[in-house]
Each structure stands twice: as C-alpha cells, then as structure tokens.
Length: 557
Image (cartoon, rainbow, N blue to C red):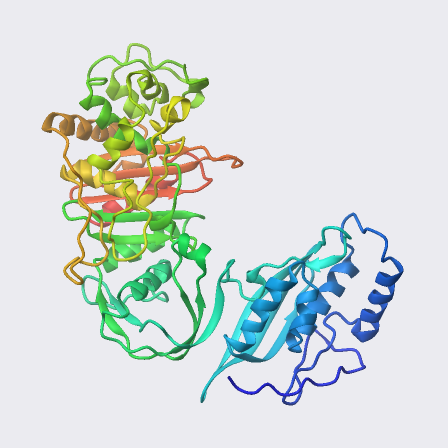
C-alpha cells in the first residue's frame, strides 16, 4: 500500500458550493478536511457547545435539517481526512465503523479520497466518492455513489450516522469487506452454446451468474489471476449464497474459458422481456435434458431466478395434482368439490373472489385454479406426503442440485394442520423460484426429472441430482391434459393465445404479508421448451408473468 501523506491542516475559510452540492477538496499530497455543508469548523464548534449545554437532555422528535447536515459533515470530513476514530465516533456503531473504514485504507488500498455531498433528502444524505486504488506499481481511479442516513442514538437521542456497511460501498453487506490484491480466483471468459462471449454489458442479468461461474470454475479453467478491488463476502452473505464481487480491475489477468448452455437469442429475448416489468425473473430450459437456455432478472443485484425463495402460489398445484391423482383422491374427468370455503386446522380457506364450481370436475378446478378443491383433500393426507412427492418425482427440496452456479433448490418442508393444507396451494412454508418451477414443467413434459444445469457435467465430472421415481403413464397423461386444458381454456389461456404446438401451463398468485398485490407466477411448456417466471408484487400470474413466459416459448420455436 502506498504511503499516506500527512493530513493537511483544516482550512479556516468556507468551502465553495458547486452546483447545489458541496465538495470536499483534496489539496497537496494529503487530505483537506473541509466542511461539506458550509458550516466549517465554526459550525462544528457550535454544535459541540450546544451539545455540552444539552448534555443532560435526551433529544427526541424528528431530526432537524441542521442536525442531519452537521452530522453528515463531521462524518464525511473525518473519513476523507483519514481520521478513522473521529469518523467512527459520529456513527451509532463506532467499533464496526472503525473496522471497515480502517480496512478501506489498509485492505482496499483506497487513497486520495474526495467526497461530494448531494442535497439532503429528509434524514438521508447522498454523496459521491472518488479516490485511487493503489497496489504496488498499479494505480486506477475509483468512483461510485453512496448515501448515509442520520438517526437519533439510543439513550441520549444525539444525531449519529446509522451505521451500515453499505455506507462505505453500496455492494457491502454485514460481514463483507473490501480487499485489493491478487485475485484469489482467476477470471473466466464465459461462452454461450454457440461460442459467443457472455458479458454483463451485453446481457445485464448475467452479472451474478458470471460471478458464480468464476467462483466455481476460475481455478479449473486455466486462467491466471489478476489484481482487483473486490467485495469479499462474510458469513451472512455466503449463507445467502452471494459470490465475491469484482468492483475494479487493476490488472485483468488471463481468463480461462467456460462453456455454458445459454442460447444467445433466447437470452437476449429474456433480457428484453423482464425489462418491461419491475422485479421480474424468468428461466427457460430444454425439457429433455435440463439445459438452461436463458435466465434473466429485471433486478440486477440478486439472482432471484436461481436463488429466490418465494411462495409459488398455485403453480404448486402441478405437484399437488400429481400426488392426488396417484393416491386416487382426484381424477381429471371425475366430479370434484370446489366450494367457496373450506376450513382445516383452524384456518378458513377460500377461492379468489370467493367463487365456487358446482358439480364440476377436477379438470375444471385445476384450470380455474380452485384452492378449496385442493385444501379439501388435506384430511386424507399424511403430513409428509407433499414433501415426498416433490423430492421423489420432481427432484426438489433436497439441496443437491449441481447447476454450475449457486442455486436454491426449492423447499417443501413437512408441515401439519393448516400450514400443511396451505402448502398444497403453494403457500405455507413452500418456497420456490423460476428455475424450480421451470423444472416442474420440464418434468411433466419429458416424464422424467432432469436436473437443470448451466455448465455441462462433462466439464468437471460432477454428478447431477436425480429423482428416485417417475410418475405412472396414466398419472402423467392426466397431468399433461390438465396443463394443456389450462393453457387452452383456463387461467393461462389469454397469455398462451398464439403459442402453437403441444403446450401446457399453470398460473399462480402468491400472497405475501405486508404486500398489497400478490406475486404473479406462470409455468409452462411448448414442445421441448419449459419456462417459468415470477413478477413480484404485481398481481395475478396470467397477466403479469404469463406474457413473459409465453413470449419466450414463442421465440424459442
């Protein structure tokens, strides 16, 4: 790490206001510790005198504009000046702040820091960061945006910076740190199935996927590590299966090559589709093999399509129906109850808009997504029946998929009473993501579970997960007919209109506590393609996720 110059003396004059924001300027070889909001040292002294006079008072109520700006000024000025202890003391967690700010200079090797504060918005103050990352004879400029929030400290109500790692850099989470040095893992050059290079610039959704590929295959792909500034994940982030992230390359090193199963035209189409809606995610598979042909998320920071853990709503009825048919509790063309309400385990369940189907068949209940048609069978089931069905037939909920990047493999826990009944319609404790639900449609279409994968197992000899059994021919035929009828005449018909060939589909809506609108789900197949998508907090799946999935099934031929 380069030697830090001496800290310059505090200038006694006011700083200049530039374009509505106030710059903290670095002069000479060291840091200029200038006030950010025009108060200067005098303002800080005034705050201290006021604090002394009110030492025994506990401050309450909303923060004043002066409290927010003065607190932000003190923190940012001290941070820029390299006065870690002073900066940390202005936060509500001095120990954690001091550790991360010390690491910013010593581990991340960021020097010559310049901070520019933007206009205050309530208790929040945005600011930009510019500096230089220096490692041996390599130097590269660093620039990014961040923000801080001022809160009242517990106990005395004094204004303090609400300490979060994201204050230092927005990509940091609890336990993470910034490190500059030789990359522990060589870079990789990821290729699509046609040999074209996959980049986050071309396909924005693939940022987290490319990070995962590097983490998994960087040491095996034949590349050489470079020098970079990166986020090194802590325990909490690793538990959430977040990969280390490169923020700045000082020397890119020599990348190895990793071939993937992604189809460039489908990937481009998936990117375009999710861009039309906020919080949308989708996955497309080849049903006969499990190859992942496309994955896209409109939110870039987390790969919901692969790692999301969300209630799948009525798309779960595909799995539940296979179980009920196998157990003789339902049959496609036989009469099946669909009342307005059904109570079980102390909970009263109902259908959307409290509809009922009088004297209807199970096919009609599936196509219209009747909740009570499924809940009514809960008294006939054992607590672990749905869990076993998901594991044994659909390969889910065993945490053993080897996709090539981190994934969440679905969860169907054993439950009892009302939560067990709720799990039959994709609520309760059931959790899935688009990768899982695309795999469910693929299993119905192909008749056999094929674990989805992004990198061929031939690359590294890993063993793909398998399911212990398949559905009988009779059950499979009924399940396909249920999904085909839903695609043609049920809740999926509007979205699937114009999707030719052999098709099947199921819609879903999953209620989320504290969320006004449900998450909209859709899973479907056409020919050898299977796909699933979710649009969070958007409404019913047929009108939200349905058009995304249907468009990709069309474009995939």
